[in-house]
Image 1: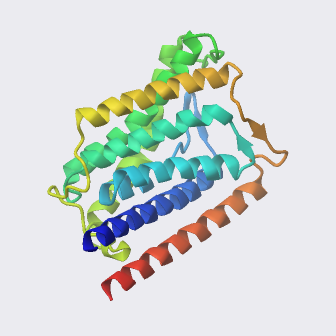
Image 2: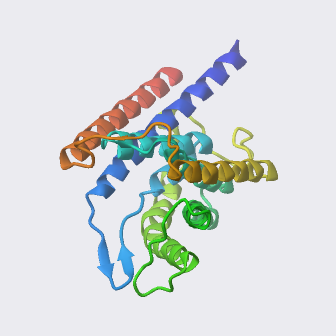
Length: 280
């Protein structure tokens, strides 16, 4: 009975992490919609993501729950809540975000290690951005998408996507992934876990698997699926695709922010209450 209860509690904690990651990252993606981009010559400075939120949760808690929650939050709040859904093509972003955050979370065995956190915090977004760039290149190469040249760059999809990758990684990857994650993880370690009734992760924690060839293999399979669905969707077979008249309106963004904030507060209260009842 005790082992069954323990497994049930673990699944409950994973659900809490999923909901927190989904709501907080969904909230962050909606806020990023309100931040204007800055164009300096051929360089565009824009906030691509606040990936430090799921990265922090993935390093402190269960990586898979945090990764799936982030991908779900972006789909629900920055797409569906804004009145648009790209159908089968949405699976591409879902898979690339999940893979990037999951691998980053597995790379950290000791959240108190600044070196491990720093390497994982920049590797996660680098993987996600690189996979997205490769998907865009493949779509152009197989002629399901038009190539949009950027003035000032060689008219090559490889040059354009490579520049976009470096631009996003150096700006969003450092400012909104690496630095906040480096600040949060060591300071929250050992303090936030009891609020969810969890024990801090350690190198000896068997509940979190190590990064292995098995994980890399499944990540490659997921990436291949992302490429296929992106090409199929762009070719006109997106299955379910719709866009409302109020898509991406200011009202939709603020409603989405309110909904995400409420879900995050409820999830936080629920997690805290569950931890209190467990320790009572």
